[in-house]
Length: 243
Image (cartoon, rainbow, N blue to C red; front, side):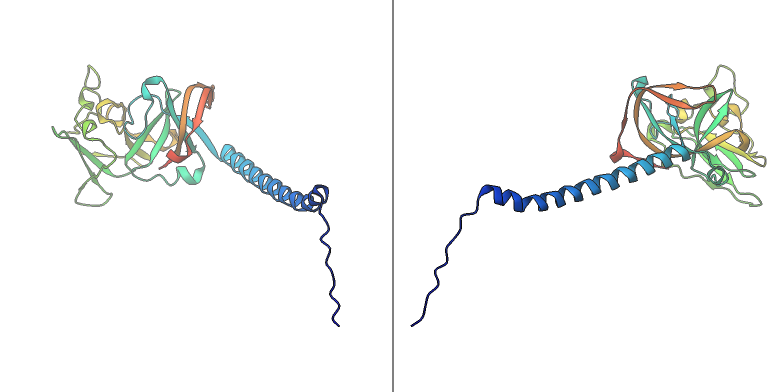
């Protein structure tokens, strides 16, 4: 004879289910809090590093359109400038730099480097910039893809009522001195730059633009030239532009 055992299903109460689930819930919460803590630490380290390493700058005026904009004074684009020696000592053609003139920060693009020779020829369909490298015998036409079609036209000759010292069409090629840079705005139709004020010396260059981050309603400038954002400002991470 085979004896059959009768299994009795004991009813599991809700209290017992909760008691069994609590350890798993605690583990899940612990993992979630750990992840949040790690993310918070990483973000804090990143923000601290950025604050200590880079200087905020903003775009005021139309001289660098369409690359940089101030949106008719409603919102300013702002970004970060690298003032470290390794950045300032590594300025290349095409870099966007910030320099000081009459206690004002001005932002322009590097067109010609020290000891290079530059000549700008007025052309009804857009100015042509020619560069001759040091000790070279032939020049080359500078490719400027950052210019828009509407901003290529000649203008600098007529920036002021009087003809500036360095006008749009350099009748004679200009050879830059050591540590001097020729800077121009991307909006050639509305930019007071080296065509009007002459080459900019290295000592007056504060740093290179690294990234454009977002928009701000207003800014306040301290006596040392530091920027403080006033009102609302927005970090637009998906529109970050590196230079």
